[in-house]
Image 1 (cartoon, helix red, strand yellow):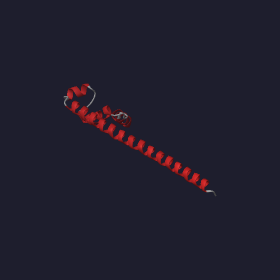
Image 2: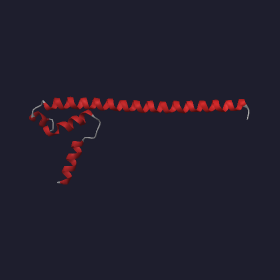
Image 3: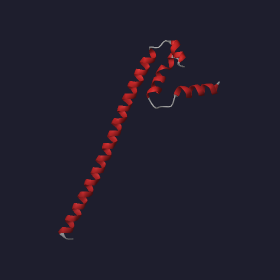
Image 4: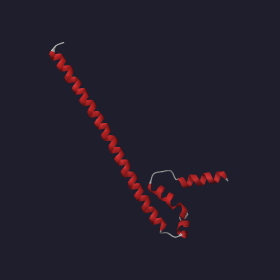
Length: 100
């Protein structure tokens, strides 16, 4: 094995290691960015839910009834309004209706 060949093999191995490390770091960066975005989105949804709850809690019972809700539902309504989740109250009402 010549010295030039050995040097070329070592250089290629170093390039491949560098590429592998760059790929790992890029993937880790994307994963961290996704986690940070998820935390920020959750925090914003929590703030929207809190603001919605506070606004609804200021309404009187008659107004809430006109809107089709009860005071006991304010927290779930606030969460539903501030996130992209399935409407739990409708599903619960449907389940309750089928049980009785």
